[in-house]
Amino acid sequence: MSPHPPPPLPAAPALTLAAADQWRAARVWPRLESRWPALLPAVTVLLAIALDRTPERCDAWQSCVTPYAESAAPAVLLAEFLVLWLRPRGNWAVPAVVGPLLWFLPNALPGPWLPTVACAAHLALAGALYRVAAGRRRARAQLATLMGPSVPYPWTLAGGDSPFGPPVAPRIRQVLAALLAVGAVVLLAVGVSRTEEDLRRAAGADQVRATVRSVHPDGDGATVAYRQLHGVEDLTAEVGGERTVGEDIPLLADGTGWTRAADERQDSTSWWLGVGAAGTCAALLALSAHRTARERRPTADGPALRIRVRWDLNGDLTVLPADGGDREPGLWRLRGADLDAFYAPADEDGPAEWLPITALETDEDDDEEEDGPTEATDPVEALLYQGPDGGRRQLLVLRSPDEPHLWMAWPTAARAVPPRLRRGRGAAPDGVLVQAAAVRDLEQDLADHPDPHPEEARAFGLPVALRCAVGPLAAVLIGLAMSWTPEGGVLGGLVRPLFLGGATLIGLVNTFAWHLEVDRDGVAYSGGLLRRRLDWPQVKAAAVHRGRFTLRGSRGVDFGFAAFPARMLHRHFGGPYDPQQLARTVSVLARRPERRPLTVLPGNPAGPALLVNRLALAGYLVWAVGQYLLP
Image 1 (cartoon, rainbow, N blue to C red):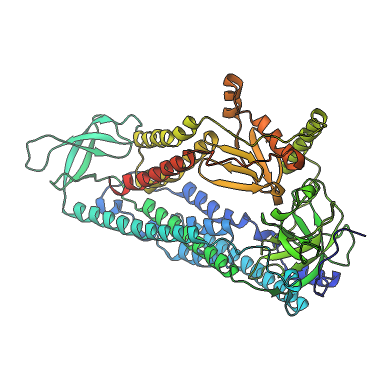
Image 2 (image 1 turned 90 degrees about the vertical axis):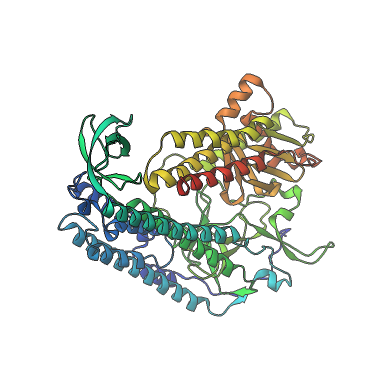
């Protein structure tokens, strides 16, 4: 008799082969649910650049001013690209609006035929995406009819509460959405204000002749000398564009120090790009936060189906009909979260209940493999709550195919992800290689320590002084580099230091300021800016793979850092910096409970580095925005 009897489960209809065929017939063109449609706005931009014959310089001031409608076209395409790349529901409406806009807006696209072709392509894509969305809704309606009324969750039948807490409140996304929305409004207001101010000054300025005295080292821009009308004093000004020394250019000067080359085009495209990017990201973050807030509402039941699932090499689960063969093609994939629960039968310690995987007894940790087998397995029967493409996350309940065959529950993403395309034999997935390296470390440890003894609780990481200094020092150096290589407009003045500089700073901090603690309760990892703790049942493997230390958690969640700096520091100076030794220690302790430390590290072993680096990043972001808005 199995030591893990089945939990009480409700009766649920089966997903039969006939229902699977109906589901496949309804789900038309599933490959359009990928990111391929995002190529359309990208190709449109490339064609517009290739066909643009606008001269760099113009003859009269009025012809040098680009209308708002023409300047807004790139921002519209950028917003469309972001939406199609992130694939929210209802994304078909975006190309349906963008296509006519590109056709109606004057001079939005160059050439006599590109606006018409782009409009037709966008409308065709909108129609195709709408048909895909309609098929998804039809398939969902068919499954909803098959599932019938809601049935209790397993823990409800067992008389307990859900082992999964509600999703974390989306306050960070709400704050970011609000900040980005405010930023979009500010950029719009500042862009329109500055553009109108330039137009007003240009209308009242005098046109004078100026002579180029020197050219900027990068070749873009020059210093010119001129005199005001009826003036005798030689003045200097800065102009943009490629110039040559001694060249005479027309210059607009209003007598108050404002100047502008009369043949220089005035384009507010960069402002519109900033507004489009910030506004689109704000809307997408707000929608994501709303979806999470809806999932936080508790529920005790939901519709369910009996299915079969099969693990693939990437740790995903593919849904199969309940009455099909083992080689039946999959219907959709289930992507799990880093949350697991198991069923604990009634015993002398208490009644039967569903518990988080972190409550699993340590003597079973080394046998449990919540993230699935390392190779494709035969299908197993399972119970699926909610079904795909509904308003809530799917929930999978099944008996693990690995020893000790616990009954498990996994929440998975609500979206029905299409099955992977079949590929020939190639390189094994990274997760499999990491687990294989962990198995080799375990075998070596079993040979070296046949009589196990507990390890000491300890911390790994680069020196505290280096971890505390890398954030502020990198922020200062990146800020100086951005100041010494200035570029105009929103892209060069705001987007480049904010995103490129910010990403560089985060990468450097994650590389040099990592810190990892191993004690009785599990592994605590600080990546320089974020801190995360995994209990031992959640730790699957660790290895140095492709130049990175990778820590693999349950359900295939990986994180880590670049190993080269730590390896070089250990090679020359020794100390607890060797990433290979760190990976070996974590892998062994994850699979040999008897080797785990018996104590917990006291206090805050990571020190002040986490707070210092967070403040450095916050200060850099404030500087990046301030240096642009307050020149």
